[in-house]
Length: 118
Length: 186
Image: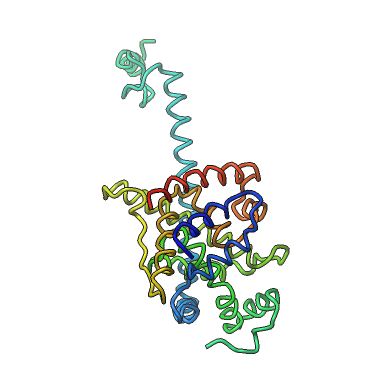
């Protein structure tokens, strides 16, 4: 098949009403086919069965751990965000004192509390 | 070596046998569908050794998800879905890698080793198809691969890619336009 015919075949195979099986068959006839190496299935079977079940179980375990980690991390981040919002709403700032739950005149209050002069 | 007696066995039977631990039955599934997987993976990633690794991963994933196969859909569709997902993940991974560590253009992320062809004409035809596919945007390339290389209908393509039929049709027409522009330069 000539270069121009191949190009035409490629374009026409994408027409909505094209006979896709015929087009792919023609391309196959022209040697446009994809294959894996000759012993592909042996390679797959070796990978699956030579490593043994232990390795597979380890992979499963790592997968579950990753899943659990993401769940915990997302929950943790959500909790931190809620905490920050509540601090900001209550104290009106993100200062160090507001994180500790102390207002600006804390020293006087503490003195009052300690001396008993309410 | 794959047992010859499995050649005429139905897919569902092979799945059952594989789940019972029969390696040869699973080997027959690999033999049956490796060409189909090769078309998807190599059509999307280029004809390279890396594509073969993804192909192996497809069947390894299939093995571990065989128990989830209910037999409602064809086994080929089930395998095709795994192949598409893994290939698209690989493209995303490569895109991330190249955007971080390399200045290569999108279509240079893919490599293909031109196999030995009996005639110059066939070699040229293969080069045209590979270059045209690799020049396409991945979201169009997957549609073209499904139609042009696998011979799927628009409806089947939509089902495998889990896309609405309208989306597939519009992508098909945009892919055709993009292909025309690429082919003019080849």
